[in-house]
Length: 488
Image (cartoon, rainbow, N blue to C red; front, side, top):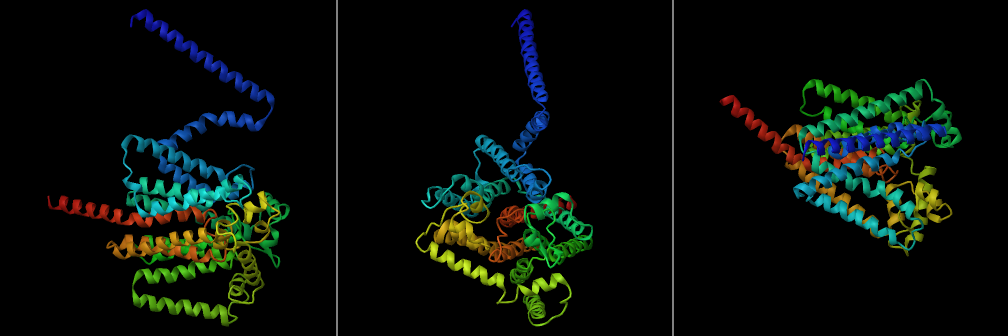
């Protein structure tokens, strides 16, 4: 190419750049002249949003971290700014998956996701896709919104965690992120209890009519920046259990103290939520931990402590003046009106589903049912339990498949833990395993599993358990390398 041709090409490029700048300026002018502040803000933020999206595609791991953060914060943010914050999780995870597909297209290496856990998650998602043609289903839009928390987020999270979180340091970073986000939630809860709620929270409670569930006998059930007090309490109980187990592990004393303090603070957060059903998380999780530890001496002591706690709540009036303890005690009452209503609702579902093995369709029960098909039996009958919700929407076939997947995860997870030799990794795995088990058992009484942030935390912890053997090999190789360097 001659010099004259180079000069001509540069002139053409400069002309194109000038035209592009003119068009962009014209668009900005029209938008600003319209006086629409939202559109103006979007235009101003567009370059940053495009840069942020490109970052998540290039580094899919960051998409998981941002999904975790928004899993904690989305409900709270929606009280201050009306925006589809929940859909940001879809965007973050989907951008990560685009980056994953781009890498796999180049490398053709799918070994990281070739495992039985990924297979089961894929089968479950395929079943949810099948529910689109369920003759009982009313709205595909409701299906879209509902299936995300039931299986879509899980599948995407599993792919990204198995593919990109393959170093032991990744597990530590996720642990730290979960703990700090939970402590921030506890601090916000203390603010609500000691200082009071702000205008946005007052509007959510009284104008959007959530006070019936959150103001009991004149006292606030603390909900922090979570979706409600039930989810706040369950999430706090889960993290308290996880940190409590880590505090018992063979870590340096400073770390054990840190985990112990985090466990105490988040347990108080669970207590001030006034959530009775969340009591199952630490109680059942503690039993699961004791069984997983295979230390029969600790197991015996643990059962004695749990038995004493149960006896105190069930058969005595100790600490009755403490509102939080009083609410926990009502969970032990078999004649509790709330329990009787739940059993009645389950009988209603049983009659309806007896001729519908595929259920009423994903998105027809609970919150999404009330929004998209409010005049149906499924929408008007409270599901309460996570498993009742799955049963109502996917039928006996769906709930059986779902329980099989979860049972397989718990069964194989135990075998993975028992084969670990590295004690630090073993305690981390047991902390995750017990937390997962506690949430799964408590989900019988409440819809804990699929709600944020607990759902997102579960979606990360499950694959992490099955990555611990890989982390053990990594640590063994580092130890061998250290010894080799010392000898040389």
